[in-house]
Length: 337
Image 1: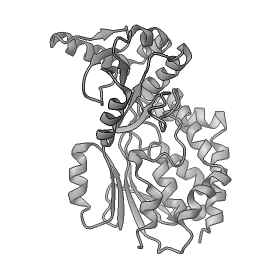
Image 2: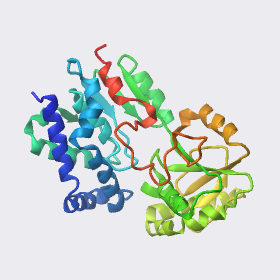
Image 3: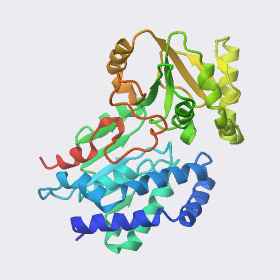
């Protein structure tokens, strides 16, 4: 029987392993052979972020309010995404620290990294071996956490209708500029745009700019990210998206490695960044509030957006930065309610 304290201790030891650059480099090399989008740089970024979570004090402060009373141990199924490396780790951590058993259906895009890290946890303490099952079926699950597209959400809602369900859908992130941003801030915005090639829900896919703003101000400060074209998968996306816009005779701005297009939409394809101008920050804030179900993060330094994420920080979420703003621990704590 794994005690609360033992769970915290074991995950903190896993965190110690994840700061070993040699170990992570080996892990990253194997991951890239299975998924070309999982470059060593991106795997290192994902693992580095996870390692910051796995500190005893941080884990205890995060989980303790939700395990104050004994709970019946349940089988919690998870349908995990695979758009960026180890995107399902937070769910694994939440379920296991809550004292439940995890049945995980992995994405075919990321079916190596999570089992490998769980294997390390079992080497730290073999008692974990019975706590996780990687499976294609979630028939035994008594509750489900599912992450997928807006289309797959309808399927999940039907298939898991008789069980408690935490359901996440498509979201993207936006940046709001006011024209006062420093070159350093705009360079950091480049990380929000292009980390993980823009594949994550926390990646900025749209930029809001004040009327009259010169888009070249952004373009010249993100030029260092032109190295993205060295990656053939990204380069193919860029070539394809540019060709589609040309054939459709649509207006766009091409900076040589991504395209900017005016659009009311929020979620953009890889290598495309949507833009839109606004007149008044207050009216834009109201617009974004009305579309909050589409938005994961707002990046801005403007006082009108006090809860916004700092430039360059979207891909450094904390333990309480829940996907779709759905508190996983709260969901897990209420399963026996």
